[in-house]
Amino acid sequence: MESNPKLSQRHGNTLLHFILILLISMETYIFLRGWNPLFSIFLLLSSYAIFRYIIKLPILNNAPRPVYLVDFSCLRPPSFCRVPFSFFLENATLIDIFDNESLNFMSKTLKSSGQSEQTCLPPALHFIPPKTHQQESINEVHMVLFPVMDDLLTKTHLSPHDIDILIVNCSGFCPSPSLSSIVINKYSMRSDIKSYNLSGMGCSASAIAIHLAENLLQVHENSNAVILSTEILSNGWYAGKEHSRLILNCYFRMGSAAILLTNRKEAKDSSKYKLFKTLRTQTSFDDRSYLSAMREEDMEGKLGVSVTKDTLQVFPETLRINITLLGSSILPLSEKLRHVVSKLRKRFVDKSQEIYIPNFKSVIGHFCLPVSGAAVIRAIGKVLKLNDKEVEAALMTLHRFGNQSSSALWYELAYLEAKERVEKGDKVWQIGMGTGPKCVSLIWECIRPILGESNNDPWADVINRYPILGPST
Image (cartoon, rainbow, N blue to C red):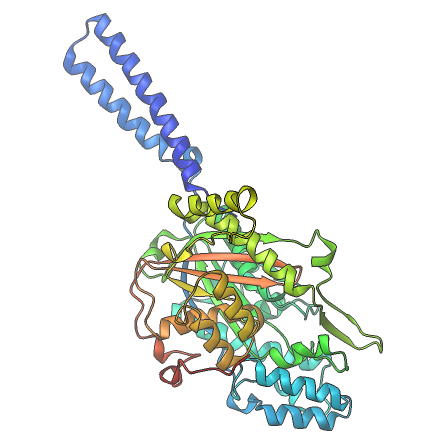
């Protein structure tokens, strides 16, 4: 849901002008009637005060309810889940499924990915061969969701009975009962809780869940919404030889996040952020985009997500559409004019002329980019004119934890907080991109000082080692 405070303000100003005209008409009538001046002044001021009060009512001015991010938690996978490259490749060799060409491809992919030797896979994928049946995936759900939920409840002093809305997102694993039902059962939540389960949304799912929660919080007053974001890897392991499907085996690693949103007025003083802007775009109406990344069986009937070469064109195009729309609503007029003039010059004067990319840093202070690989992060950073420090959170998250799919955005925000870079008044832009393809932008405004986060997971005990120089890609 895109809030439009300017539109609401315009409606309010129109009504105020109407009230002013009405008051002038009343004053003229009072003057012509020859009434007592003191009585007429009192009547006019009273009428104006009443009208000012009425116009502030939400039912008239259509002002969106503010949505606050109280706090969030990220999983720090246990050390026994760590998978160094040598361990990963040795296991892959012993599985006796992959040929030498596949093993060499995975070795090169790992070394150029931007990941470190500290990333983790769930216990089910440590077995030879990996255990990918239903119960192992359920065990992984318990392992990644319950710890972050417990941590969030502790941080926010929230009881499970205080949760009005629950949204769980996981792209590739959709059991019955649903993941949201598993959580409700574990924490004995209320019978009237509004629960939602999102699947098939790819790496953009967490941002989509925030977008959904924003809509729900506009409807339900005084409500708390919890979003649980993860990806279950034991269910998504590809046991085939096609290179386009082996990429996900090498990139995706354990991770999860729990986020508490609320529209309660009293939460303003304790919350970290206020949701400033959301924008969601997609290009799945186009066949080439729709087919660019898809989970399907290979020639041998092995299930896996294939990533085609078209992804290199369609994902940047989806991002371009999103940032163009976003820029038109948040950028200063000077940046908009420079962009428009450069487009006109390229079209009518000099076709070799580069189109000016607006400077989002004039509005945004911090960036959380899709953690789809070091090369992708740097490419997006180049488009947005970001320097090394501004893409640091994404690169370091990829290095330490790998690509945790939709929850990676929260590891990046946790990194920025642990480095104590986010200050009151700063704006943070999270960009979620996933299969479909789809792109979701979330912009948060920091509303209180954020200190002492370096002692909290997931960056506790390691934040002082970062940033580090990553491998070339």
